[in-house]
Image 1 (cartoon, rainbow, N blue to C red):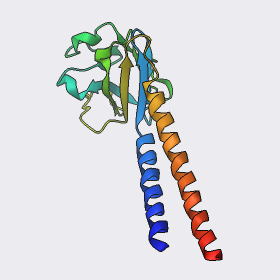
Image 2: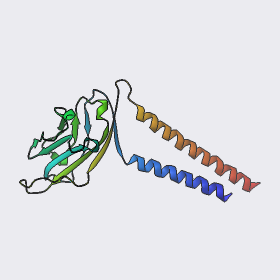
Image 3: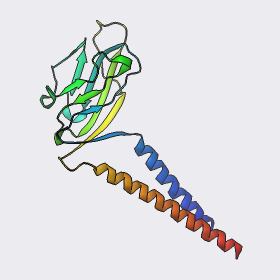
Length: 178
């Protein structure tokens, strides 16, 4: 009797941890051709520089903003004239990225880094940890909703596990009464 209950509890715990951990990552799904915004908010307003990058691009940036302007040096060619900050004044620390006319090639993991401080003459060093990580998935036109299927699948699995746990509990309870 106890091993069944322990097994059920451990299964529910593992599923709960999986759902909790996967919910922590920011994911955005878009359809090819759309304009999208990748959200990022800095902890303060004294922003010297903003860098949006993707690890698979090597040393090239998606966007680099420093000293009040976009820096085209070392920007990956596929992002030229397609990216901008949502608010170049960065009110309330908003350094969200606008990506125009997304394509399947834009799929990837985007990282937002910010250099903050009081001295604007100091060169920004953006080698620290990202403050925001966004996983972008771009579907071909007419094929959005792939992530909805995964969410529905997880919900169905969770409902099934809860129902199975309830029936096992009732079965064990009924055995005690006999």
